[in-house]
Image (tube, rainbow, N blue to C red; front, side):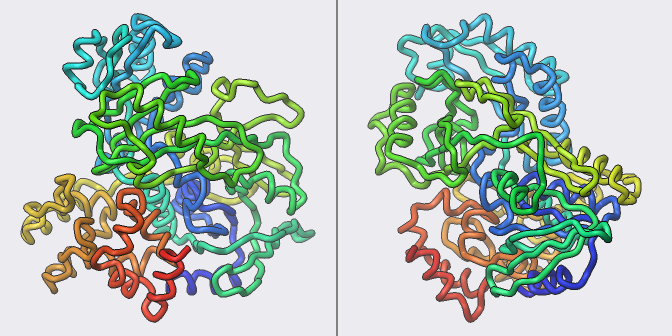
Amino acid sequence: MKLREKNIELLKTDVFDVLIIGGGMNGAVSAAALAARGAKVALIDSRDYAGFTSQTSSNLIWGGIKYMESYEFGLVNDLCKSRNELLKSFPSTVKEIRFLSTLTKASRVPPWMMLAGTWLYWLFGRGETRTPRMFSPAQIKNTEPLINVEGSIGGVEYSDAYLHDNDARFVFNFVRNAMDHGCVAANYVESSSGFHGSDGCWTSKVKDKIGGEEFEIKSRVIINAAGAFVDRINGVTGVNTEYQHIFSKGIHLVVPRLTRQNRVLAFFADDGRLFFAIPMANRTCIGTTDTPVKDPETAVTDEDREFVLSNINARLDLAEPLTNKDIISERCGVRPLVLKKGQKAKDDFLQMSRKHVVEIVTEMKHISIFGGKLTDCLNVGEEICEEVSKLGISLREVKEKWYGEPSNEVKAQYFKQASSLGLDQVIATDTGEILSDRLWRRYGKQAISMLNAIENDPTQADEMIEGSGIRRCEMSYIAENEMVVKLEDYLKRRSKLEYLVDFEELKQSKGIMAVCEKLFGDDAQARYDEYFNR
């Protein structure tokens, strides 16, 4: 909290080149890209970082194979290129994974066409993943005995990528990167209004939702990266745009791990869209839906649960069908889809483009980011830098990437020290991950300070929450550096414990109060009650 309080004081007094409203994926990469180029950047969000749409994805980093059906080959080409760059730049976090797609007579495409499509997709991916393969029903059953092949006409296996950690953690690491380059960031700071003055600067009126104080932030440029709330914020600041959002709700259910193999099982659901069973640590994430909604704030309904459960039960040979009792947690969010004002939305949301749009109002020095995907994040960062430069903000040339994991030299130093402490022999969680790998993947070069803490005090390597793999040294670092304001910020976004552990089990778990005390000090009991008594 001290870091957050310090940054709020800086927000009050400094004049910034750019103020970014929204700390989701679009805002985080924009901040990281601009700060690395020397811009004086402020970043605020009315919730926690990645506190809305960016915490509810499927955790897939994919090139958009389904967009080939709507002939958006340019989008698929760009997304595949972005996916490959993420695989190269974040090798510990973004991993290649095989998708096994089972087809039936009711599927939209026959196996030969699906195989041809996956080969074309592989070519769009520059051949940088494993090649596709066709499967007979018998081969599918032999590969994944859990799949119900009754009525199957075969299937295809191909490669894409996924996040080893959760999407919100991936977003926060871009925020951390931005702060390392001088960005002043604060969560739970809400933008209420703003105006572009005669002096050429924006004055944004904001409120600290934790302390209650209202103040102003001065900046030369505004970037509205508020995701599903872009239109709402543009409305209160008087910015007229050519584009707007419409929304499609998607949900996922997290259930006990269905198969131990690290593979995504893909099917065509009853409504015709691709439907997945995705590994998530020691769980399986199943979904998704695609339901048009008018309001971005949504919830999982009984109808949503029935759709997901009935689809997965029909496609797998389970000893017992999955029921509501098997649901450990739920993920629900909207996809903000981009539409020109006055343009009619397609009746079939599956056919609507997932392209992002960056719209500039030059005379007001205002930028809005519409749409966006995890896979496309680096492109958004680069595009924002180009547009901010056109608005008169001087940016320096970057000689190294503004994104990605630390250098091989830093990595070698880290693993040498970790090995000397025996952390390469310690299993971090029941998924079998090595502790030294886990710390590096989640914290990068910041994990070196954790090794130093363990070297000084071996008890810093002790687990804080039984069975979670989370160590004391991690919690000390997070408390000082990651602006955790509420317990949900940690359990749902800095980690993914909320998704992996049943609510009541988490409430009773050993160590949860010790975590609260580490994060919140004297406010530990209040934050515990706020989360568990909601």
